[in-house]
Image (cartoon, rainbow, N blue to C red; front, side, top):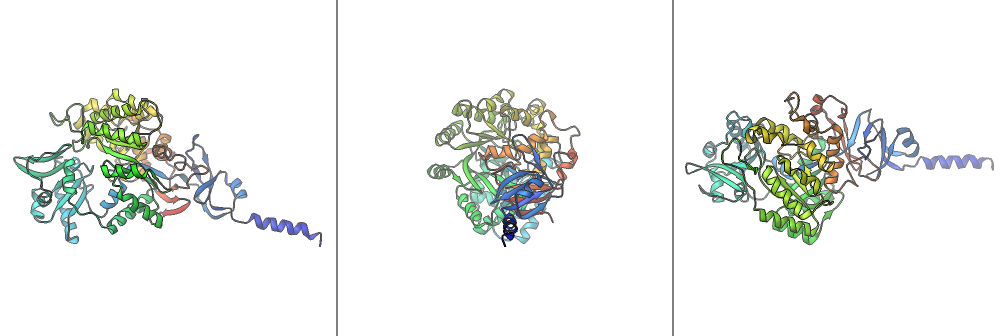
Length: 543
């Protein structure tokens, strides 16, 4: 009997070794960890939603017994992609409305809206996505035909950038808009004493404030529909820019129920009630939701000539665009945000708007700091103003697809000299040594592969121009990947919890069908997501 004890001991020990000590083992992969040295591995282990170990499969399999094993089949794996500037909720709402993106003419817009009205017979007709720059005449439309189609039912259709819209007379009547009416930071277009229906920047809000608020069901559907599409392209965190404080509880409740799994970094809009909410309550932070920033708008968009320029538009004499609020307003907002220790993120497109905000930031930040105040877009920055980004650690948060979307018409707006210093992502990146990337969806497509392609190849989806657009400001593939992962996380003060596949961080990752660090540049837009994981749990799989 004594001779049996060693055998029994070994059997018991073997049984103990077979006990599960991990939830997931991913192996047979090319794992781009995007850690500080940009190392690769072939396997990693997940436990309780976080990365437990990273390394060689043989070593990890000896040490860990996982409940689930994923053989990646040699495919490349990356940290979950982060969109550092988007309008997630707005995108979701747009999925419930008339989609006009890609419409080749005003007539095509009207046909789409008319068709939509036959199946949606009550309430306001709300649409989004038209862009006159892709039409043959490239002129803003007039509401006359819209009025004839919908003489009673209110209609408002937003331009693709969200900074302009066209409304029919029924909507204008509800809003009380009259010919010749003016508004600070906006424009109500009047021609020969008649309203054309075109509203720019702050003028749009006069109408949209009259639209009944979405129902709870519509709001939930918007968030969940947006989530579904984002997971399919590998996004695991989105920065939602400019929400009201009331959305915080809605998002938190859906996340608590487990329905909304998307991680969100929310910037509250520049409104007094939002400041009151966050100043009294303090920053809101959970694993899925981070609210500690404010989104401010300095100017409009270049496409609708609302961007504020130092010199007149090249294609519209005596017109420089405009700031959306007074300089005093921006100064006061910056001072109170700084006093409370929150992050300020300001939309600035034109070189004049960028100069105003950069100088205000510099006055408040006073040199090197870790407050990570951001300029959203930073599209046209005067060469002499670039220094502010580095001197005061101001973060340029850019969207590479804006460059490749705008390049075909931006020269007409700006002229060759100004365009040459626009969309200068490499130059901006060098100021602090890092740069977060996003899309600004629904202005641009939600797909991060398009971001990666535009950042590195500087071409549109047709491969134009053949040699790339102003390639001196292209990012390397390593820089672009960091911009969509660890640098985007850093812009949100979240680099210690996400953005790379490292021990202790959330197990958010994506498996792609091709390795974006190695494929030909022309293949990048066609790379597809095979699987998306959050907390080591699969949230999307390609069918």
